[in-house]
Structures are given as structure tokens and as C-alpha cells.
Length: 229
Image 1 (cartoon, one colour):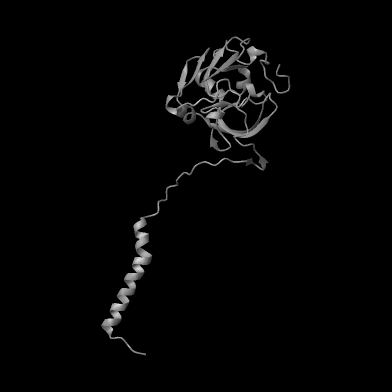
Image 2 (spheres, helix red, strand yellow):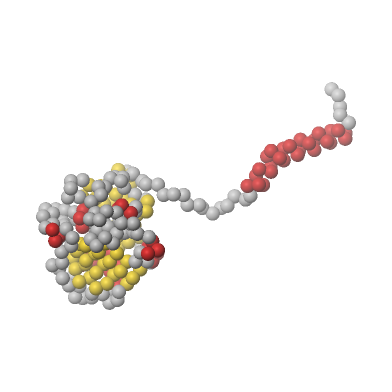
């Protein structure tokens, strides 16, 4: 074995160190420190919940009166008015940020013969009404959509039940086709009572009010356990 002079050995060691630094250490330094902050990725639709299968958010037929409504979040306002202590006008973010969120699996049954079981997330209509304060004379709630569609319910339906106005379905923000910003999850009611693109909640003392389909012969109660005519 031939020994290298000490100076040459030192040069070889330095050269190897430089190569290792360039190959192993420098790339790490160039990336900078790893952030501990959690970065949100795009939401992915879930297709099961607690072991039970869910329908897809695309498993719906388009049957709105004027087609899907496309609403900008910055332009949206929800108004709670009528027989109330005060009229409440809220932005999309105010509705979500100022109220407790709830979630549940509910099946929509359409009079056309199809259904869809979805994991819904939203806020309670009861909380929205309580914010405005229900006048003792009020007994009916009329909901109005961006496209002019309306439907009504007894006030007790919202006050006695946990009925949500949904903004998410199957873990993703509700698409325009389904009613963004908000769709009413009208449990135990036929699909025509599940009003989409909700913009106004009005309290009245007129239980005879008839909405869009109700004026055309559909049941005003819309109860699933009864005929829709």
C-alpha cells in the first residue's frame, strides 16, 4: 500500500467533505426550515359515514324553476324579517361565524321517484330566528330563494325540531347546483320543500300562504308520510 503524503491526504479529505456537503447538506439548507403550520388541502367528498353508504353530491336531478343560481359570496345577504323584534341581515361569513354548526345524515325524497342520502352540515334555522326574535303573533315561516322560489312551514317545525340550513354536503362546500350558499334540509318533507339558494326567512301570521309548487296543487305540509297532492 502506498501512503500519501500528509498534505495530499488532507486535500483528499477536504475534497470528499465538499462533495458530501454539496450532495447532502446544501439541498436541505436551500429548502429552508420546515413549517409547523398545518396547510389545508382541498376537501374531498366522503361516500360513507359511520359505516353507512352515502349518495354522491352528483346524484341529484336538476329540477329548479330557473336552473342553477350562481351567487358570489361577497354579494350574498341572508335576511330574517317579518314579524320579528328586529330585521337581521347577515353576510355568508356572518351566518357561519356567529352560529353553532351541526351535522346529520338525512335522505331527500323527490316526488319524481328518486332519493339521495347525504351528510349535511349547517346552522339551525331556529338559531337564525331567535337572533331576530319571533313576534308572538308569528305562526308561519316563508322562505324565499334567489330565483324567486318560495315555500312555507309552520313556525313550530323549526322551533321544535333541529332543522338545519346546510352549507356543506359530504364534507365539501355545497356546489351552486345544489343550492350554494344555503339549502334547507327539510327533514320528513318531500323534496320540493328543500328550498335552495335561501336568501330570506320571513315570519308571518298567515298559515294559508302557498309557495311555488303549493300554488300548483302540491301539499302545503309536504309531509313524507302523506301524498304530495
